[in-house]
Image (cartoon, one colour):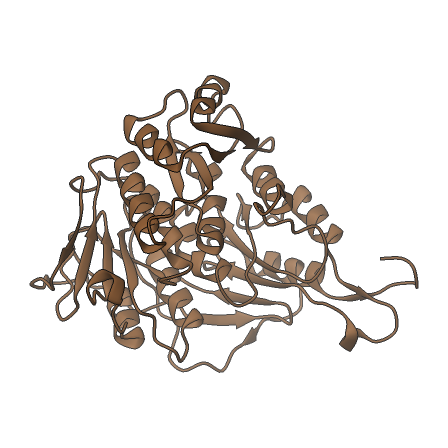
Length: 387
């Protein structure tokens, strides 16, 4: 394995703390609120910043999703200031993934995490670095709290809440529609609130496209999701995941609210690859050739999908691809990377390039796997007329 190169970036890599367990969200409304009184944060270290790199990859080396979100936000906004940032509860992966839709236009709001009712030091450090300017459309709010009531002293807040994951996602969909001039999105992604490993790739697409994410269970459509779908009026509905995540009967019932297509592979890795390749008119990444950004995360850290969403909505853009074992690059993923490997005939300077963002520390994705990804992303000489 070639050694990894330490980027010369200001600050040191410090680990955050948090978790990815589910917890109930707040009350069912979306309202503006002012800054609130503070609470003592849990003692943890600072943000995970992009620290380890190879020629074709950059790693956000956070110990958990809190640190990864802080690192991504600082990487996406190294100089310019965001209008607003999202603050979601790290214990509810569904809130973070659904809130990823706000990482795209018009707000371009990166996702940061609260830990219950406290602001971890990694998140606080990122806020202090980012110093969001405030969104006029939200009454000057600098922070959108999604399913969280964590106090953020000194910042103006706007709350989006829901009594259930489906209600919270519907409230985010409503907010996104209002921000877009009350024009509901034509395309909607539906995923299982029971299967984070299949829902994760939706976060990057929502951030890039502005298409909302709505929740179903494996066997039912919550009433809040039905109400939201009715607002879209004959939407194009894309169900992410196989029947083990969203049953065929649920897909059939969704047909009452628009056209429905399923995007799925045999497992989470294959589903993420299928979504990366997918194209249906203006919907889908359609990453089937060289010259793209890619984001890599572990299914064991579902909140990393929300943490990384801003990478899919800026810079080199690109879909989220998944690994399940920190030390193994799955063969289907290797094959996909080979399929889109860049090549050149005479001069590599004239070629196109792939770049990969690795999200998480070695417990998520090992350095040896990062090195292998680097090799598969490398531009290669090819014979004239061949790839």
